[in-house]
Image (cartoon, rainbow, N blue to C red; front, side, top):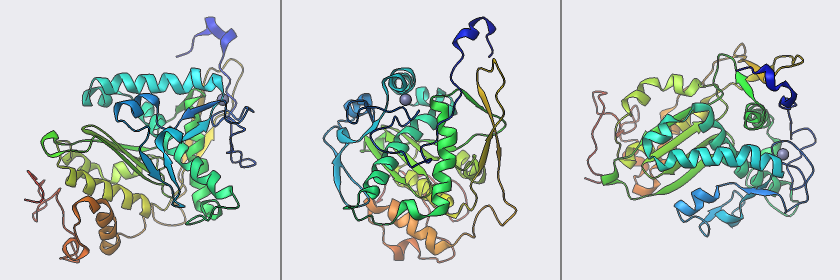
Length: 339
Ligand SMILES: [Zn+2]
């Protein structure tokens, strides 16, 4: 990767931490912290190409404090150099991939997907955080007062700096990224997104492709769900995708560790940073114990569109219903639901 002939143009390897002084406002670029004129330099949380493709501009989002905003009004502060050098090229790359359909998205590097999903997650998070810092707003729950949540956000932002600073992750991937595909014959929804700010789970549907990620688990959830993920590599009914997502959301909720990241010391002439990561699991288990009733709640939430009541989900309290697997634990085909 090193190219000594161009050493005069070495990239800036200085990391930015917006949590220092809680600089999330419109005065600072979200990626590098540069002071900007509020309102002039911004980028959309959901890129223009995405909003055009799925007619999102006027569509509305309900925030945690019940405030309603249009997609097109969700924007984050971004200096012109971060916009043109980092954000727009990333969006152009994902747009080009999306135009090639599912195989185009699958061909993207996982790091690219991590950064792309991370940018949207971060944009929504910042919108909610700023809202909380507004003394007139009444947050549903105080994000900024939960110490473990803040640690997670901070850890995520350290790896997310890779959008601006060349960073190599040594021997780990910061996130679990899942790519699923729906059966187009059974699928009517072109676009949707959902997230859980507290566990850093974000999911977005682009036509037949559904991307779901936990942004700060060092790939632990994907490791734990390896078999389910392999079995889900086939066209799925949306009710099956929803079940898969319920499992990711619940696993992220049970996840009991926050990774620590350590940039290695920089030497003159270095053209990128190298991060090491340590997961301190000395204090307990990586996951808190699985509870079927709580998992059932996650299913209930994800299956809202099909209105499957709790009594049906929990018919067998030891084994909440599944559309991904049959009673014998074999992958199940769902042609249509309800039947
Ligand atoms: Zn910037």
